[in-house]
Length: 344
Image 1 (cartoon, one colour):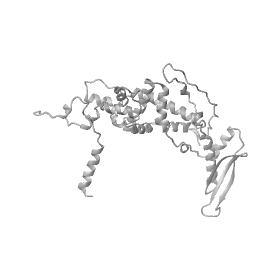
Image 2: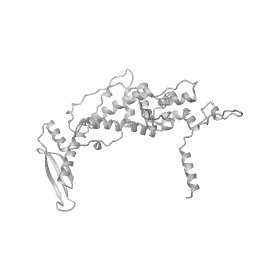
Image 3: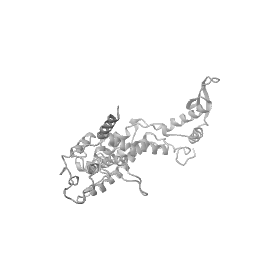
Image 4: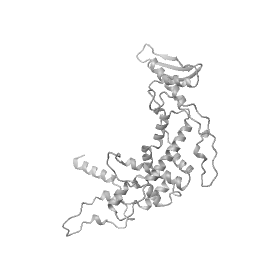
């Protein structure tokens, strides 16, 4: 491919990235600031079409299609509500720059704050009820993986909310970090969660979060790390008043070869707690201790026995409250290698 063909392909690729702006719903097009008057000594500043397009509201048909696409047309029945959920607070300065005489648009700042708290509540109770023995630091990491900023931005992108987002990039300042596109995009699912709670009920908002966020599988096992799993296992066994763990060689092959394999099990009395393999006895014992800890920390409550405290809230205003039976309290977490301040 020659130089001219490469430049043409690059132009076509860049043109495909430009978002198409519908002008049917706009009162005037082209805008007056885009037309350079004749016989004027002082010319106007160059017209920035991209900035002007960012300041325009999306067409009502796109807002309605978005509400139907995510299955919330009966909740987000007004285009103004959808537009508010898709308007970041940084958009106000851009709107005042182009439309100083118009009223300030409603933003999703308060809705995103409320929705973020609700999503954190739903994710925390769901993970805590599903994994009752999970350490606190791993619980926080799992909540972030489910409903954190990157997850919210990814879900909003899959919903098709990116073309509807109204925002303005802000640089980094001494008091606040720079605002990037994923940061602004992540506020849309949070605002929608708050709108569902306001328009419908708290169980409806929880169902929305369950459908779009908590139903996704995350790798919790990879979040559990130990510097010394043998010592952590000893602390856990002592907490449950069990016998001191002992390592036993279960199987081996090729001890005197270049690639030996050892299988070690860790026992507390007659009960086997974990099993691991490795090219050395030390490695196999390390993995066996990790396996024993994972079996405890990743103990999962069956889905048909899972109960959440927010299930007691009525599904409709003034409706009956749901039933909730609190499960038995699990033993307190092992302090060693389970908190951010631990030396483990």
